[in-house]
Length: 282
Length: 321
Image (cartoon, rainbow over all chains, first blue to last red; front, side):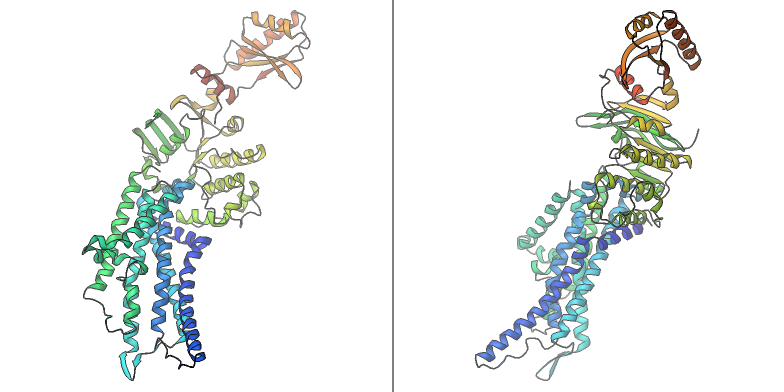
């Protein structure tokens, strides 16, 4: 009950502040711009070819699924960064502003941590849905959501395309939620907002950039990471899958891993945040 | 005795720099307004934080409604808090801040208009908290503390940023809450205002309780005093009074352009004080000194504060901040 109350209050707060609303819509806007920009650049390229007396190139994408995946692929990193920051602010900002007393009088500390994290997850899912809808709308302007037919050969049927798209996105979503959990953990351990933001963004980015140093463990751990930091992300790979590239297919166990690893990591982050918050003086 | 809403028992809290609380006892019964006063660094806020379960005591116990303070959230909706500043969400409007507070407690926010009206917040309901002055933020924070009709109020310097009229209005709200049975623990450096509303007093100094009890009883321990205006004969009057058996001490005062003498009596109780005043008046009259004013001095919290700190080895000039 107290978890639900905290969840409701936090979700209300996140959707009422300017920063929260900006974070909610920015990934969708960027995703849509990527799709529209891609179509625009393709049109300009064709116009230039025609002006040079060359034959216009055929469309880069036969269906709208490729641009849709590209749009989501651009918006998701912004959403991941927003989730990291919102997580980082979750407790640190209350600590800075003197709001911890208000929180801990209203709910047990464990409920506060869990309720805040669930609210961030709700916010991420909402933002992800908006991103999907915005990219889909923009993609529909340039192409149709049809089966992938190449020279009369049906490479992927329409249901197959939707299934692969949804599988890739659903399996990529836990990584984004895990970003929020990582931020909350750092927030619980930090002294203030600035420290929490730095402690969240810097290690996250460095680890992702240098994940090769982890050797064989890297790909297993880095399923949690966002598309622009790792091509192992299902969100990054789905763009190739729905374009029916020859080398694009899900590896055995890849999607299960993409769900389970961030889930386990997120749970670990949550437990650490919980433990630290319980032990720490407010 | 009324049910205790908040209780600290022999609480010790140590920081690296030393002990902040040394065996502090505080009891806040239902319907009481307990003023927690003391100079800067006395440990008032630390005591409040321990009482709310925000800090774990090193020794002793802290209880809220007879359960450990650390589990204060069990009583959510029953505790209103103003501590660590107004702690409003700056990006949210005033109404949204109150809505978030109510949602956290799993309740619907009641209409805050009556409080807004009394605290001069009309017209600010939709303004973002970041655009409010500090005084306005404290007023909103006080409304937030009162919003859900709490049974326990813990208020740290709620009127520090208010002008006297607002401070009076705010403390009137506290008094009304107490009248309907709420227990209140409040710190304030405005001792005159606090004296109007407090029923009990705890005076902390360097982490120790110097005074603890019903305010009326504590004020009764101050020796009765008189204020005497002797026209142009202040000096002979002072000399005569200094020799009088009922007088413990005579001080010069100047108030409203008058040369006044403050005469501390060597008696206790209202009746003895009254008899002593009559005797002093007669003695002055016999000496041919015309008395234009002879009035009993109401014991004040400020005086109690000053004297207690003097006895405790302070200078007596510490501010109750």
